[in-house]
Image 1 (cartoon, rainbow, N blue to C red):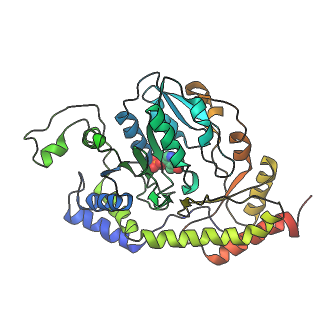
Image 2 (image 1 turned 180 degrees about the horizontal axis):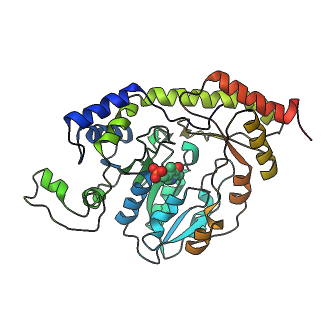
Image 3 (image 1 turned 90 degrees about the horizontal axis):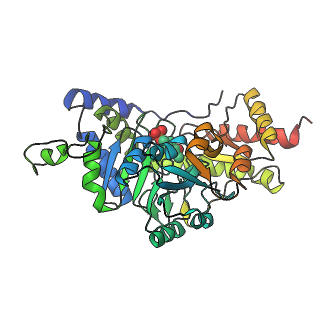
Length: 380
Ligand SMILES: *Cc1c(COP(=O)(O)O)cnc(C)c1O
Protein backbone atom coordinates (compact mmCIF):
# COMPACT_ATOMS: atom_id res chain seq x y z
CA UNK A 1 0.00 0.00 0.00
CA UNK A 2 1.28 3.50 -0.84
CA UNK A 3 -0.16 6.07 1.59
CA UNK A 4 -0.83 9.65 0.55
CA UNK A 5 1.50 10.97 3.22
CA UNK A 6 3.91 9.45 5.68
CA UNK A 7 5.31 11.83 8.30
CA UNK A 8 9.07 11.98 8.36
CA UNK A 9 10.74 10.56 11.44
CA UNK A 10 14.39 10.00 12.27
CA UNK A 11 15.97 8.82 15.51
CA UNK A 12 17.43 12.27 16.02
CA UNK A 13 14.02 13.73 16.95
CA UNK A 14 13.83 11.29 19.88
CA UNK A 15 17.29 12.19 21.01
CA UNK A 16 16.50 15.93 21.03
CA UNK A 17 13.12 15.37 22.72
CA UNK A 18 14.81 13.30 25.39
CA UNK A 19 17.23 16.13 26.00
CA UNK A 20 14.41 18.68 26.14
CA UNK A 21 12.64 16.61 28.79
CA UNK A 22 15.58 15.66 30.96
CA UNK A 23 17.92 18.63 30.85
CA UNK A 24 15.84 21.67 30.03
CA UNK A 25 12.67 23.42 30.97
CA UNK A 26 9.80 22.29 28.77
CA UNK A 27 8.00 25.64 28.79
CA UNK A 28 8.85 29.14 27.69
CA UNK A 29 11.32 29.98 24.96
CA UNK A 30 13.90 27.32 25.75
CA UNK A 31 16.95 26.05 23.91
CA UNK A 32 15.09 24.33 21.07
CA UNK A 33 12.58 27.10 20.45
CA UNK A 34 15.51 29.51 20.29
CA UNK A 35 17.36 27.24 17.87
CA UNK A 36 14.29 27.00 15.60
CA UNK A 37 13.81 30.77 15.80
CA UNK A 38 17.43 31.41 14.76
CA UNK A 39 16.92 29.05 11.82
CA UNK A 40 13.76 30.89 10.76
CA UNK A 41 15.38 34.32 10.96
CA UNK A 42 18.39 33.10 9.04
CA UNK A 43 16.21 31.53 6.33
CA UNK A 44 13.88 34.47 5.94
CA UNK A 45 16.39 37.30 6.62
CA UNK A 46 13.69 39.08 8.62
CA UNK A 47 13.67 40.99 11.90
CA UNK A 48 11.80 38.47 13.99
CA UNK A 49 10.14 35.10 13.94
CA UNK A 50 8.00 33.47 16.62
CA UNK A 51 7.37 29.76 16.85
CA UNK A 52 3.67 29.11 17.48
CA UNK A 53 1.35 26.26 18.39
CA UNK A 54 0.06 26.03 14.79
CA UNK A 55 -0.07 27.73 11.42
CA UNK A 56 -3.65 28.61 12.31
CA UNK A 57 -2.42 30.42 15.41
CA UNK A 58 0.21 32.30 13.41
CA UNK A 59 -2.63 33.57 11.19
CA UNK A 60 -4.71 34.49 14.26
CA UNK A 61 -1.78 36.42 15.72
CA UNK A 62 -1.34 38.27 12.43
CA UNK A 63 -5.06 39.18 12.45
CA UNK A 64 -4.71 40.54 16.01
CA UNK A 65 -1.61 42.53 15.05
CA UNK A 66 -3.46 44.08 12.10
CA UNK A 67 -6.18 45.28 14.52
CA UNK A 68 -8.92 43.67 12.48
CA UNK A 69 -12.28 45.02 13.66
CA UNK A 70 -15.89 44.09 12.91
CA UNK A 71 -16.77 45.23 9.41
CA UNK A 72 -13.22 45.21 8.05
CA UNK A 73 -12.72 43.36 4.79
CA UNK A 74 -9.97 40.88 4.01
CA UNK A 75 -9.19 39.74 0.47
CA UNK A 76 -8.11 36.16 -0.31
CA UNK A 77 -8.69 33.26 -2.68
CA UNK A 78 -11.55 30.90 -1.89
CA UNK A 79 -9.37 27.93 -2.81
CA UNK A 80 -7.66 27.59 0.58
CA UNK A 81 -7.83 26.03 4.04
CA UNK A 82 -10.47 27.24 6.51
CA UNK A 83 -7.88 28.78 8.86
CA UNK A 84 -6.90 31.41 6.28
CA UNK A 85 -10.42 32.85 6.60
CA UNK A 86 -11.27 31.90 10.19
CA UNK A 87 -8.39 33.88 11.66
CA UNK A 88 -10.06 37.08 10.41
CA UNK A 89 -13.69 36.03 10.91
CA UNK A 90 -12.83 35.51 14.59
CA UNK A 91 -12.04 39.25 14.74
CA UNK A 92 -15.31 40.16 13.00
CA UNK A 93 -14.01 40.63 9.46
CA UNK A 94 -15.89 39.98 6.25
CA UNK A 95 -14.01 37.80 3.77
CA UNK A 96 -13.92 38.96 0.16
CA UNK A 97 -13.04 36.07 -2.11
CA UNK A 98 -11.34 36.62 -5.44
CA UNK A 99 -10.95 34.10 -8.27
CA UNK A 100 -7.77 32.09 -8.79
CA UNK A 101 -5.45 31.69 -11.75
CA UNK A 102 -5.97 28.26 -13.28
CA UNK A 103 -2.23 27.76 -13.90
CA UNK A 104 -1.02 28.04 -10.28
CA UNK A 105 -4.31 27.82 -8.31
CA UNK A 106 -3.18 31.04 -6.58
CA UNK A 107 -5.16 34.28 -6.23
CA UNK A 108 -5.37 36.14 -9.56
CA UNK A 109 -3.35 39.26 -8.84
CA UNK A 110 -5.16 41.11 -11.63
CA UNK A 111 -8.54 40.77 -9.90
CA UNK A 112 -7.51 42.11 -6.49
CA UNK A 113 -7.83 45.81 -7.19
CA UNK A 114 -11.48 45.49 -8.24
CA UNK A 115 -12.27 43.85 -4.88
CA UNK A 116 -10.90 46.71 -2.78
CA UNK A 117 -13.41 48.92 -0.94
CA UNK A 118 -12.93 51.63 1.74
CA UNK A 119 -13.32 48.79 4.31
CA UNK A 120 -10.48 46.66 2.96
CA UNK A 121 -7.63 46.25 5.43
CA UNK A 122 -5.61 43.20 4.48
CA UNK A 123 -4.71 41.02 1.47
CA UNK A 124 -3.85 37.39 2.22
CA UNK A 125 -1.99 35.66 -0.61
CA UNK A 126 -1.94 31.88 -0.12
CA UNK A 127 1.05 30.22 -1.78
CA UNK A 128 -0.63 27.02 -2.93
CA UNK A 129 1.61 23.95 -3.14
CA UNK A 130 4.55 26.10 -2.02
CA UNK A 131 4.50 27.99 -5.32
CA UNK A 132 4.42 31.75 -4.87
CA UNK A 133 1.66 34.18 -5.74
CA UNK A 134 2.67 37.11 -7.98
CA UNK A 135 4.05 39.08 -5.04
CA UNK A 136 5.46 42.10 -6.92
CA UNK A 137 2.02 43.00 -8.19
CA UNK A 138 0.34 42.25 -4.85
CA UNK A 139 2.81 44.43 -2.91
CA UNK A 140 2.37 47.24 -5.42
CA UNK A 141 -1.43 47.18 -4.91
CA UNK A 142 -1.00 47.02 -1.12
CA UNK A 143 1.25 50.08 -1.15
CA UNK A 144 -1.09 52.01 -3.43
CA UNK A 145 -4.12 51.44 -1.15
CA UNK A 146 -2.22 51.33 2.20
CA UNK A 147 -3.19 47.72 2.93
CA UNK A 148 -1.34 45.15 4.99
CA UNK A 149 -0.21 41.86 3.46
CA UNK A 150 -0.21 38.58 5.39
CA UNK A 151 1.31 35.72 3.41
CA UNK A 152 -0.24 32.35 4.15
CA UNK A 153 3.00 30.50 3.50
CA UNK A 154 1.88 27.43 5.47
CA UNK A 155 3.01 25.26 2.54
CA UNK A 156 5.86 27.51 1.48
CA UNK A 157 8.71 26.92 3.94
CA UNK A 158 11.96 27.04 1.92
CA UNK A 159 10.22 28.17 -1.28
CA UNK A 160 11.30 31.41 -2.92
CA UNK A 161 9.99 34.25 -5.09
CA UNK A 162 12.63 36.32 -6.92
CA UNK A 163 15.08 34.73 -4.53
CA UNK A 164 13.22 35.94 -1.42
CA UNK A 165 11.88 33.39 1.08
CA UNK A 166 8.10 33.05 1.01
CA UNK A 167 6.73 34.58 4.19
CA UNK A 168 9.36 37.33 4.10
CA UNK A 169 7.76 39.57 1.46
CA UNK A 170 4.51 40.85 3.04
CA UNK A 171 4.20 42.46 6.49
CA UNK A 172 3.75 39.01 8.00
CA UNK A 173 4.31 35.42 6.89
CA UNK A 174 2.61 32.40 8.43
CA UNK A 175 4.24 28.97 8.36
CA UNK A 176 2.83 25.61 9.36
CA UNK A 177 4.79 22.74 10.88
CA UNK A 178 1.79 20.44 10.96
CA UNK A 179 2.46 16.77 10.37
CA UNK A 180 1.20 17.09 6.77
CA UNK A 181 3.79 19.75 5.85
CA UNK A 182 7.43 19.38 4.73
CA UNK A 183 8.93 20.01 8.19
CA UNK A 184 6.93 18.98 11.18
CA UNK A 185 6.55 19.22 14.94
CA UNK A 186 3.20 17.39 14.98
CA UNK A 187 1.20 20.56 15.45
CA UNK A 188 2.98 23.89 15.17
CA UNK A 189 3.80 26.91 13.09
CA UNK A 190 5.59 30.23 13.01
CA UNK A 191 4.85 33.89 12.53
CA UNK A 192 7.44 35.72 10.46
CA UNK A 193 7.44 39.46 11.13
CA UNK A 194 8.91 41.61 8.39
CA UNK A 195 7.69 44.93 9.66
CA UNK A 196 9.68 45.82 12.83
CA UNK A 197 6.85 48.05 14.08
CA UNK A 198 4.99 44.88 15.05
CA UNK A 199 7.76 42.91 16.79
CA UNK A 200 7.24 43.96 20.40
CA UNK A 201 3.46 43.68 20.33
CA UNK A 202 3.73 40.23 18.73
CA UNK A 203 5.73 38.98 21.73
CA UNK A 204 3.05 40.38 24.07
CA UNK A 205 0.16 38.79 22.20
CA UNK A 206 1.95 35.44 22.20
CA UNK A 207 2.62 35.71 25.97
CA UNK A 208 -1.03 35.97 27.08
CA UNK A 209 -1.07 39.75 26.70
CA UNK A 210 1.75 40.26 29.16
CA UNK A 211 5.17 41.90 28.82
CA UNK A 212 6.79 38.77 30.22
CA UNK A 213 9.37 38.84 27.44
CA UNK A 214 10.62 42.28 28.54
CA UNK A 215 10.73 40.97 32.12
CA UNK A 216 12.83 37.97 31.07
CA UNK A 217 15.28 40.22 29.22
CA UNK A 218 15.47 42.60 32.21
CA UNK A 219 13.84 45.55 30.46
CA UNK A 220 11.05 45.81 33.05
CA UNK A 221 11.25 44.61 36.66
CA UNK A 222 7.77 43.14 36.92
CA UNK A 223 5.54 41.72 34.25
CA UNK A 224 1.88 42.56 33.91
CA UNK A 225 -1.14 42.45 31.65
CA UNK A 226 -0.69 45.10 28.97
CA UNK A 227 -2.70 44.06 25.89
CA UNK A 228 -4.86 41.43 24.23
CA UNK A 229 -3.26 38.04 24.02
CA UNK A 230 -3.45 34.31 24.25
CA UNK A 231 -1.11 31.34 24.62
CA UNK A 232 0.58 30.72 21.32
CA UNK A 233 3.84 29.24 22.63
CA UNK A 234 4.60 25.64 21.76
CA UNK A 235 6.32 23.24 24.12
CA UNK A 236 10.06 22.60 23.99
CA UNK A 237 9.30 18.94 23.24
CA UNK A 238 7.64 19.86 19.96
CA UNK A 239 10.37 22.36 19.11
CA UNK A 240 13.02 19.70 19.75
CA UNK A 241 11.30 17.42 17.25
CA UNK A 242 11.12 20.24 14.69
CA UNK A 243 14.72 21.31 15.13
CA UNK A 244 15.95 17.83 14.21
CA UNK A 245 14.14 18.26 10.87
CA UNK A 246 15.16 21.88 10.27
CA UNK A 247 18.80 20.85 10.62
CA UNK A 248 18.20 18.55 7.62
CA UNK A 249 15.95 20.97 5.74
CA UNK A 250 18.10 21.16 2.61
CA UNK A 251 18.29 17.40 2.33
CA UNK A 252 14.52 17.07 2.81
CA UNK A 253 13.77 19.74 0.21
CA UNK A 254 16.17 18.21 -2.32
CA UNK A 255 14.58 14.78 -2.00
CA UNK A 256 11.01 16.10 -2.26
CA UNK A 257 11.80 18.27 -5.28
CA UNK A 258 13.51 15.30 -6.97
CA UNK A 259 10.38 13.17 -6.48
CA UNK A 260 8.22 16.03 -7.77
CA UNK A 261 10.38 16.32 -10.89
CA UNK A 262 10.27 12.58 -11.43
CA UNK A 263 6.44 12.69 -11.44
CA UNK A 264 6.55 15.64 -13.81
CA UNK A 265 8.92 13.99 -16.30
CA UNK A 266 7.06 10.68 -16.30
CA UNK A 267 3.62 12.28 -16.65
CA UNK A 268 4.69 14.73 -19.36
CA UNK A 269 3.80 12.39 -22.28
CA UNK A 270 0.24 12.01 -20.91
CA UNK A 271 -0.01 15.78 -20.59
CA UNK A 272 1.28 16.22 -24.14
CA UNK A 273 -1.48 13.90 -25.32
CA UNK A 274 -4.02 16.05 -23.42
CA UNK A 275 -5.11 13.35 -20.97
CA UNK A 276 -4.22 15.54 -18.02
CA UNK A 277 -2.66 18.83 -17.00
CA UNK A 278 0.49 19.30 -14.95
CA UNK A 279 1.33 22.06 -12.45
CA UNK A 280 2.97 25.27 -13.65
CA UNK A 281 5.87 27.01 -11.93
CA UNK A 282 6.41 30.63 -12.99
CA UNK A 283 10.02 31.66 -13.69
CA UNK A 284 10.20 33.86 -10.58
CA UNK A 285 9.37 30.92 -8.32
CA UNK A 286 11.54 28.29 -6.72
CA UNK A 287 9.41 25.57 -5.15
CA UNK A 288 9.92 23.22 -2.19
CA UNK A 289 8.30 20.00 -3.44
CA UNK A 290 5.42 20.35 -0.99
CA UNK A 291 2.80 18.67 -3.13
CA UNK A 292 2.30 17.22 -6.57
CA UNK A 293 -1.07 17.59 -8.24
CA UNK A 294 -2.51 16.95 -11.64
CA UNK A 295 -5.78 17.98 -13.22
CA UNK A 296 -8.07 15.79 -15.30
CA UNK A 297 -11.16 16.53 -17.44
CA UNK A 298 -13.78 16.88 -14.71
CA UNK A 299 -14.88 15.72 -11.28
CA UNK A 300 -16.34 12.43 -12.51
CA UNK A 301 -13.09 11.47 -14.21
CA UNK A 302 -11.13 12.47 -11.13
CA UNK A 303 -13.30 10.32 -8.86
CA UNK A 304 -12.87 7.34 -11.21
CA UNK A 305 -9.12 7.83 -11.18
CA UNK A 306 -9.07 7.95 -7.35
CA UNK A 307 -10.99 4.64 -7.29
CA UNK A 308 -8.73 3.06 -9.91
CA UNK A 309 -5.61 4.01 -7.97
CA UNK A 310 -7.14 2.85 -4.69
CA UNK A 311 -7.83 -0.57 -6.23
CA UNK A 312 -4.13 -0.66 -7.00
CA UNK A 313 -3.18 0.27 -3.45
CA UNK A 314 -2.37 3.91 -4.09
CA UNK A 315 -4.01 6.53 -1.91
CA UNK A 316 -4.66 9.87 -3.56
CA UNK A 317 -6.83 12.78 -2.46
CA UNK A 318 -8.47 15.86 -3.85
CA UNK A 319 -8.04 19.18 -2.04
CA UNK A 320 -10.00 22.24 -0.92
CA UNK A 321 -13.70 22.56 -1.50
CA UNK A 322 -13.87 26.33 -2.19
CA UNK A 323 -14.67 28.25 1.00
CA UNK A 324 -17.24 30.57 -0.59
CA UNK A 325 -19.53 27.62 -1.31
CA UNK A 326 -19.37 26.25 2.25
CA UNK A 327 -21.92 26.98 4.97
CA UNK A 328 -19.60 29.30 6.90
CA UNK A 329 -18.21 30.86 3.74
CA UNK A 330 -21.69 31.97 2.68
CA UNK A 331 -22.23 33.45 6.12
CA UNK A 332 -18.92 35.23 6.55
CA UNK A 333 -17.85 36.07 3.03
CA UNK A 334 -18.75 37.12 -0.46
CA UNK A 335 -17.25 36.30 -3.82
CA UNK A 336 -16.20 39.38 -5.73
CA UNK A 337 -16.61 39.11 -9.48
CA UNK A 338 -17.12 35.90 -11.38
CA UNK A 339 -16.10 32.42 -10.21
CA UNK A 340 -14.55 31.35 -13.49
CA UNK A 341 -11.90 28.98 -12.19
CA UNK A 342 -12.11 28.42 -8.42
CA UNK A 343 -14.94 25.87 -8.45
CA UNK A 344 -14.20 24.20 -11.78
CA UNK A 345 -10.46 23.83 -11.33
CA UNK A 346 -10.76 22.53 -7.76
CA UNK A 347 -13.06 19.73 -8.95
CA UNK A 348 -10.48 18.52 -11.47
CA UNK A 349 -7.53 18.46 -9.13
CA UNK A 350 -5.95 15.34 -7.64
CA UNK A 351 -2.95 15.13 -5.32
CA UNK A 352 -0.50 12.23 -5.61
CA UNK A 353 1.54 10.68 -2.77
CA UNK A 354 4.61 12.79 -2.01
CA UNK A 355 6.69 12.36 1.13
CA UNK A 356 10.34 12.02 2.05
CA UNK A 357 10.41 8.23 2.21
CA UNK A 358 8.54 7.70 -1.07
CA UNK A 359 10.72 5.67 -3.41
CA UNK A 360 11.41 6.39 -7.06
CA UNK A 361 10.15 2.89 -7.91
CA UNK A 362 6.85 3.80 -6.28
CA UNK A 363 6.60 6.96 -8.38
CA UNK A 364 7.16 4.81 -11.48
CA UNK A 365 4.45 2.39 -10.33
CA UNK A 366 1.97 5.22 -9.63
CA UNK A 367 2.55 6.83 -13.03
CA UNK A 368 2.17 3.44 -14.70
CA UNK A 369 -1.22 3.00 -13.04
CA UNK A 370 -2.28 6.46 -14.25
CA UNK A 371 -1.09 5.51 -17.73
CA UNK A 372 -3.19 2.33 -17.57
CA UNK A 373 -6.25 4.32 -16.56
CA UNK A 374 -6.02 6.64 -19.57
CA UNK A 375 -4.21 4.74 -22.30
CA UNK A 376 -3.28 1.12 -21.82
CA UNK A 377 -6.40 -0.18 -20.16
CA UNK A 378 -9.22 2.38 -20.21
CA UNK A 379 -12.57 1.06 -18.94
CA UNK A 380 -15.15 2.80 -21.09
C1 LIG B 1 -1.73 23.75 6.77
C2 LIG B 1 -2.30 25.05 6.38
C3 LIG B 1 -2.79 25.97 7.32
C4 LIG B 1 -2.94 25.65 8.79
O1 LIG B 1 -1.81 25.23 9.44
P1 LIG B 1 -1.94 24.39 10.80
O2 LIG B 1 -0.53 24.31 11.28
O3 LIG B 1 -2.50 23.06 10.44
O4 LIG B 1 -2.83 25.13 11.73
C5 LIG B 1 -3.23 27.20 6.90
N1 LIG B 1 -3.21 27.53 5.59
C6 LIG B 1 -2.78 26.67 4.65
C7 LIG B 1 -2.77 27.11 3.21
C8 LIG B 1 -2.33 25.39 5.00
O5 LIG B 1 -1.92 24.54 4.06
